[in-house]
Figure 1 (cartoon, rainbow, N blue to C red):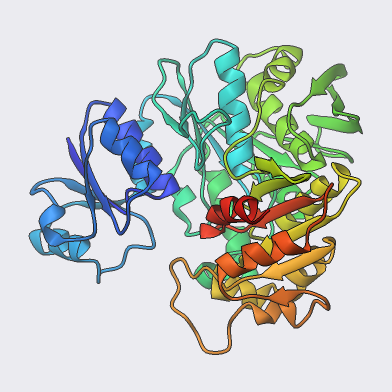
Figure 2: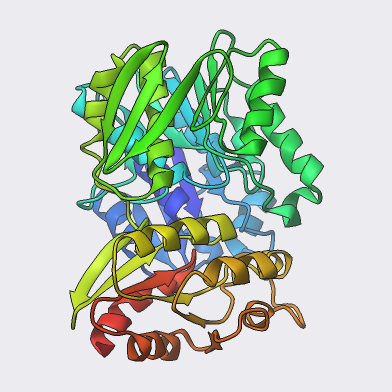
Length: 443
């Protein structure tokens, strides 16, 4: 078949493009500017256009979009006028995953990392899984791969409800915290979407939830009561089938079904111990020995933009991180604090005006863990600018934080504030990632 991807350079969309290409389909696509993701698709055989134009869309192609693409886009407009089939990228991903055991990783935080852990571990175990991950693996391996094995591992994005297009064999929910209320309208609707996600697990499948997350644990209890087979994991108590976690240096001691498991990780952070424990239970469900799965997980070295070391200069380590929710910001800063005796300096780019407004106090509280904070202008993504909604909503609540609207100037400012021995973080879900090189250059 022919597929045309609008916004092909996006993290999720580019992975879909790779999977469709590897599946033997003809793929074209476009985006507003060139990128490494577009280059990767072009090298893989896709016809790629820079800029959006109605002439880019082949007649008869299935057009693939994300929620960010509106009817104002000339390519979507021409496809609609011709009556071409238009599908969401999650639907295209489901097409690519047909006939495979679908493992869906959902949750407010940790989806990319946990999906990456699963992909690496099952690869180490010789199972060649397919994957659809919204970030590259450490070493540059793409987030998209159509493997020869029977398994398909995918991030399940709750932000726009598109995770409800999947019917997984195994669903792993890392945590549930209200977010994306611009889409859902209320916390109740947000939680109901996860209930529906659990109900979509195929008959006889498994739901795995982190009991350390109150929202995920409540989902586990509701799902169990509804007859869905459910396991939990975490530091405290859980359901009948529960993997108990005890953190130790460099990893964790686990207990599952009365069997001790030694888990040692190549990535830092208590949150990653939990991510790996959830991944381990997926492996057990799909036939792996628990200790073998734990050993395979030790080979995971991270994913792009998840506490990614971008360089060292003048005694400072510059690390880039995708954290864009207060809980993620706090976890990243806790990890940084545990890795240095020096200071932690942060340049933070809020993502979405609505999220900045809703969570301003929570962001300020989380960022207070850093020694220096420079906040730059909001990355709007799919939203239009709105009067009175900007980054000063955070800095007004955080004494000592500086508001520097231009991200290049902000990067140079955080470099100026840093000292030898410090960790300097570029943090956020937008183009702040490009500022890691600016910081290094300034140093």
